[in-house]
Length: 194
Image (tube, rainbow, N blue to C red; front, side):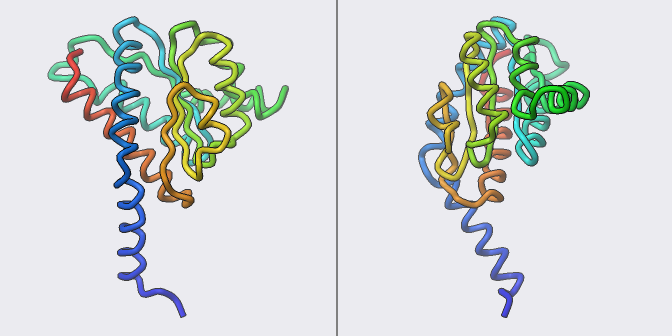
């Protein structure tokens, strides 16, 4: 017997709402915003990375923070953002010639500089290439932010600022990660002068 669609939808929405109800969300935003604002003020680059759905969220956030935070005619200081997942040639070259665990860390080694920010997204918090990138970032003096779920995995303890969605569902975790990115974008646009 399958669950009726209406009941399934209601349950899914309630579970996602439960993952948003915890006070961790406002605490996380209050810790992340100053890092991003400082990066913009100092002309630093924010690097976004993740795999699968998290790669999509990383790319999506680059567009949002790079464009949707602009006010009016686009005057004011902009965020410098790079989605390391979007350089398919580099990703596939490092995966093919070295190891998939190096696809982000080697790009950071080339592009990153002390004072930049690495924004890592991993539903499980245990993606080897994400963890390798965080390790590289820390060795370079790059501030690290991590979004995870499922208890946070190894990413939780590896980053400077961790946000762990209180859910063991990959779908709810990814739903909330995207909401966090939209929330950050809206806050930076509406509440923080450029």
